[in-house]
Image 1 (cartoon, rainbow, N blue to C red):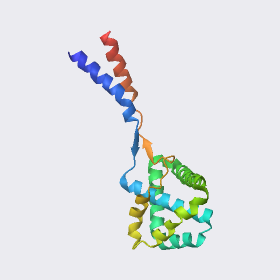
Image 2 (image 1 turned 30 degrees about the vertical axis):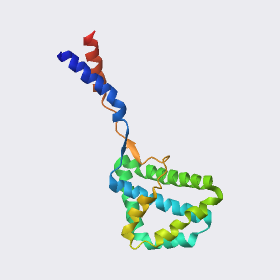
Image 3 (image 1 turned 90 degrees about the vertical axis):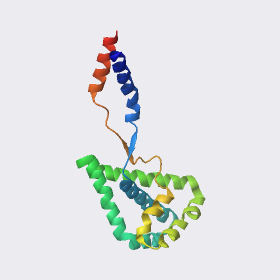
Image 4 (image 1 turned 60 degrees about the vertical axis):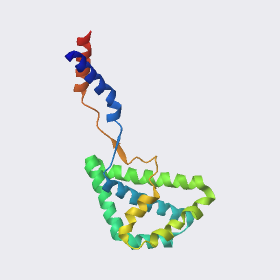
Length: 171
């Protein structure tokens, strides 16, 4: 009976591995920083594609301290997560985000500017800079093609050896 339970436990661990490898989302504070970065990127794409530099500059001026703090938070996330490769991964994230948003804008074609241009009006009308995180979260701008979740590390090889050992004893 004990051997049967050991085999069952080992097999459940073996089948649970895909769940362990599933993406692990970032903390809510990190997620908020990514959402604000996505908003900033979306507005940058709007400014570039729709020739609306004045409103983008007004957005940057109004929220400059908050955007700088957000940039520091994102940078800290990447440094913590990737160590000395943090800046490279940060740059990759910002580039992937801008490219994905630009691609989405291209997919909308002529509807992009009228459909998304209202965001400048909305964001500039927020009562206080402290409303920016909630506004960004409500827009759900992080493209699914840009991963802000990272997989958990693979389980140690020791688990594989235990499963093999238990399975060989059963025979």
